[in-house]
Length: 228
Image 1 (cartoon, helix red, strand yellow):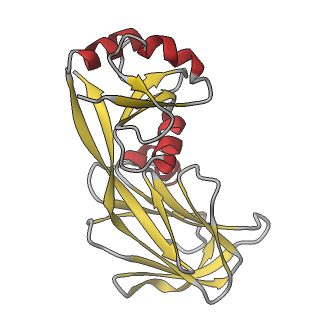
Image 2 (cartoon, one colour):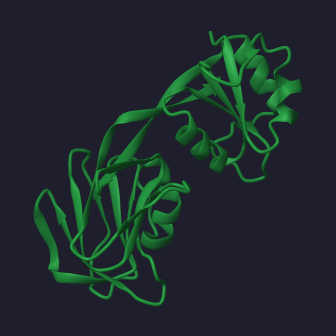
């Protein structure tokens, strides 16, 4: 059973009353449970701020696909009764310029200036994709969890296993694809600048011509607590 909980969200003061009788000590650091009070974006922010620590979702948003279809009071009651399970969620990671970003939903490489397309080459396990340079707005590499978001808006599909790769506004006819977990995606910028970012994080990596990023499934995972 969890003992120390940290509440994460814009209106976290509203969740204090809900957790008052949950048998948890509320802390500001070193929690063994992070209570995400918000919507899906709150979970992404919380995982970035407190990676690897189990997350429990409480609804404070009309849009929350990750929240259970239960009232917050019922969720807390079932947590107190130890009626829950832990679910592991895959992450992607990208490496560029000596930095690493981790994404629960997706890793996006995008042209920095929307007025100008980026030119790039893309390889999977060292094998070049397409006939040569690709011109467009970039790529989206998604996890199964993230496949119903940005990836789906481009590819008009989703998936349950693997790594999804979608080409954003590409002038070359390239099919979106779902890769097995061990594959490695390498994007080399021919004409930039481009930006690389993960999920809804404020941090990003800027790439100029001649620079590249590598995207793989991460060994790190996120953990969600789902009540039964």
